[in-house]
Length: 111
Length: 114
Image 1 (spheres, helix red, strand yellow):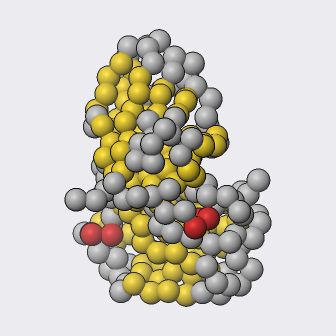
Image 2 (cartoon, one colour; image 1 turned 30 degrees about the vertical axis):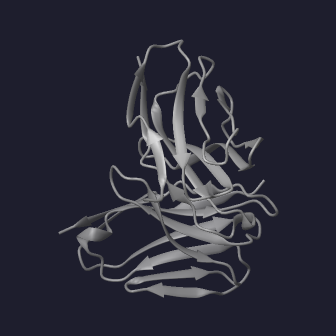
C-alpha cells in the first residue's frame, strides 16, 4: 500500500520564524489534503491539492504539490502564536473513498 | 445547525466491557469515518463507510465493529477484544465524489478503560 512519511514530528520556532512540514509518498497520490488540529481540538480542513506542481496560498500559508505528485509541503511565513497546533497531510487510495492521515507535525511557537 | 455530533465527550468503562460511541451527522454526507488518536500520535483509520449498509476496514479494525443502518449514523463499538482501547476517538464525514472533498470532524470522544 501507499507509504507516506510526514516530517518533522515536532518543530519549535520563535515567533516570527518560518515553519515547513513535508509529506513524502512512495507512490503517486491522486490528491493531498492538509488539516490543522489545535491542542484539545479536532482536525480542521485547510486545503486540497490535486494538480501536479500546484501551489496554493492562504495568507501566510503556502501549500505545494510536487511535480510527480509524490510529495507535498506546507510552509508558514512569520509564525504567530495562533499557528500553534498539529498539521496533518491526508490522502486516499485510488478509486476508494478512504482517507488516511500522516503522523502530523506538532508546531510550538515561542513568543 | 449542520455538523457532526459525537457523544459522549468523555467515557469511562471497566476492562472487559463493550462500549458504543455515537456519531451522527446532518450534513447529508455519504461517507463516514472513525479514527483513533493516541497522545502525540496521528490519526489511524479504524473503519469507513461509503454508503448505507456498507463499511470497510481501515488499518486498525481489530477489536472494533461498526454499523451503518442510516445515512446519518455510524456508531463504533469498542469490544473487549481491543487490547488497548483507551484513546481519543474521532468521527468524520464527507460527500462522496471518491475522495475529492474535505472531511468534517466531530468533537471527539475520549475513552478511558480502567
